[in-house]
Amino acid sequence: MNTIRQSIAAMGQGLGPDVLEACRQLFGAEQQALADAVPAAARDLAYGPHERHRLDLYGAAEDVLKPVLLFVHGGGFVLGDKGDTSWPNAAVGRMAARRGWIGAVMNYRLAPDHLWPAGSEDVAAAVDYLRGAVAEHGGDPERIVVMGTSAGAVHVSGFLRLRPDHGDLVRGAVLLSGLYGCTPLDPKDTRYYGTGDYAAMAPWDAVVETQLPLLVACAQHDPARFQAEFLGLMQARLAGHGTMPRAVLLPGHNHYTMAMHLGTSDTRLEEEIAAFLEDIL
Image (cartoon, rainbow, N blue to C red; front, side):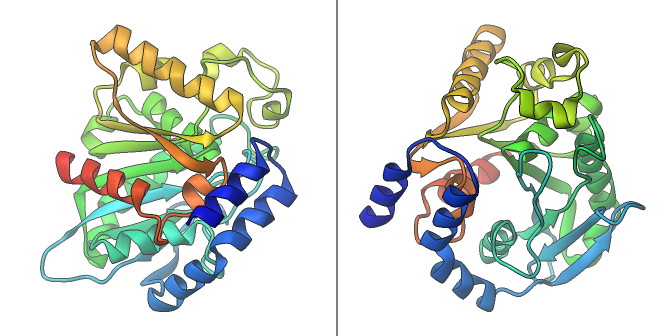
């Protein structure tokens, strides 16, 4: 583990295809073993009419319905996949299954062909679908927790904004390295938001004000903007609620490995997520 942490630290806070591939190499062997051990229970379930409206389920149905963890991948709004033929992103569903939950991993429509609020609309549609269908696959529709990383965390936060009834639909949200509206819009994010009023589109008010239980996480080597968003959200929640939400600053990880390592022998974040679910479900 120390070797992996040293490798991640040496990458710094940068993003890009080369860093992403280097991160994949660090966890590939462990994640491939998990993929071999935990196959998908159902693939390409359609939660809407678009070709990207698909999700996969992990975990076996048993006599008692299980909690459901819905994972929304990252990818800068413009790329990413639920990973049914590879381990990135799918590993989160497999981790959930190994924990005794039902893991759901979804695709969503991508920018620039699909602008704000398409991603959040798709999270809402996936939640609605699971509430109606997941019991057939062993999941409890009354115990759904939604989790996203990076752009996925933005879409989960946007779901909180889009659906004021979100507290009746899900039991909690896990936000990994998201952008909530505390810092100015980066020009590349106009691929999703366009050139309109970002403050009017960002999920900031919803994620600050929601009464839904939250687990918010940031990586030690996240880019500075993501760290500023994490700290800004903590301050705003403290000011508005008198307390911070449950939170994790995860040492030894970067923006990509925050979700990518889930399911490996580094269980620190996994244990935090499990404790969060245990407390709210």
